[in-house]
Image 1: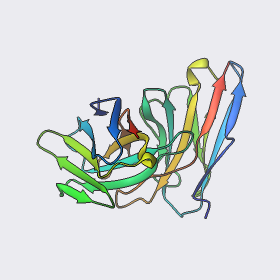
Image 2: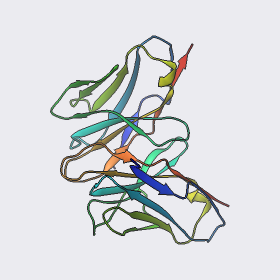
Image 3: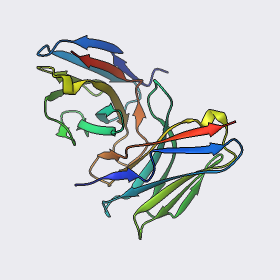
Length: 112
Length: 113
């Protein structure tokens, strides 16, 4: 069935370094992707999204890259800060289906 | 600005008991969703409602029922709770028409003994 997954369950980075979190999806019809951040005990918070007609989108300290050929997307966080420590999820959706399928998540640990 | 509100935040049930999780949004969104989150499993879609008057099964619908009471409210019911339904449940909503951001509630932690 349709799936969205991430390559690594935990990622540890030094404060100030850049972080890259990867995600793979299986449904080639997926045309919209979102990255969420979830802190302990809270609901997921929107970080950035990208539609399939784009390869790259930038926000504040974050960049999402989409490679439709290999069905892969990544979230890059520049100058990682302690406040970035959380679990990060990618989710994919296909226009008209109203369904959003989430990956299992990557826990980002920022080392001082 | 409340956004998506879920009640209760915590609940402990015995096997076989029933309960309803309530969700309400004040953003005039058309689509609403129920997810469950288990350790290491990410968020899995239980049911969703694309618009008022419609509901559809997601990835893991067994053991659950839903009601889209009106545009604002979407409830999730466990008719006969099982330990396997111990989880954190999240409600979310979004505007229909153009695929966009899901807005989440803070979650409801359910334990079934």
